[in-house]
Amino acid sequence: MNLAVRSALFAFFCLLPCAQCCVNEFQPTQVAQSFGEFIGRFRPHSQKNPGPSVGLGMALIRVVDNPPKADWESRAAQLRAVLSAREASETKQGGLQKTDAFTIRADLAAALLHLGRTREAIQILEPLAKEHPWEYRLIATLGTAYELDGQLNRALEYISRGIELNAQSHEGTEWLHSRILKAKLEIAKNPKWLNAHSVLGYDFGDPPRFPPEFRTDDHVARVLKAIGYQLNERLQFVLGTDPIVADLLNDASHIFEAAGKRDVAQKLSARAASFKPKE
View 1 (cartoon, rainbow, N blue to C red):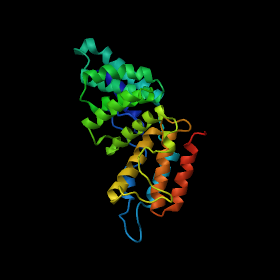
View 2: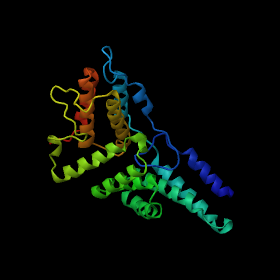
View 3: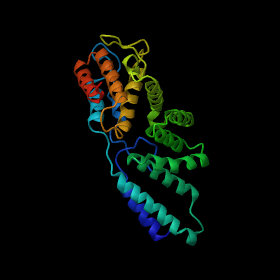
View 4: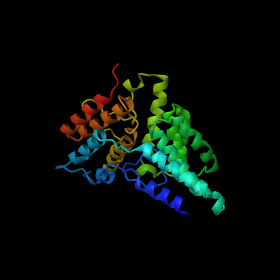
């Protein structure tokens, strides 16, 4: 590897953001909020401390109030510099390594998605996905790109394929991403769908109580973890009101209300109201 390539790679790694983006990147990043904290703060049911803890609820609120931020312009520029440096060395070193090139291009597409340059990202990702159909990072990122572009059926197809390839992606929470896309498809057919339905599909009743599906601590923890993780990623793209975010936060408030944590439930309900579009 020549000096120009090494210098570009060094600068690239120095610019890695602290927040994991909504899409799947190849270069390692760290999630801004610790989702191990979610599960660590979840207490088993007991007479003294039933259901999810207050600390767990406050961790979820911090996700909403402080979505991850990164300098995606700098990251995109650095990734382009890495590609340029590697391609410049092609004639001297016998060709650009195809595997390395595709991961850098995929990460460039991820940065472009965060910059709102969705079509440009799709143009990069589509041929890469054809060349590497078993690489779940590419498949899932392309699914997210299609979602951001409004191609919801294609988005669901690729997110579902990504789950088949790696069900543990994003801490095993992509099942909720799939539900979100299905809800978006229903809303596209009926804008008032959320008035009678929810993304999660649970009936908490009024006043809220745990539905029959919430039979174990593990299930409650799984749902809250998915809400927290998916919101941590999704809120990087939400600039104003969003009915999906509002609905997920509303159900999170129901969970804490059912567990008797009314203060947390009220805080989550207020956050949900702030994301609900005005009719």
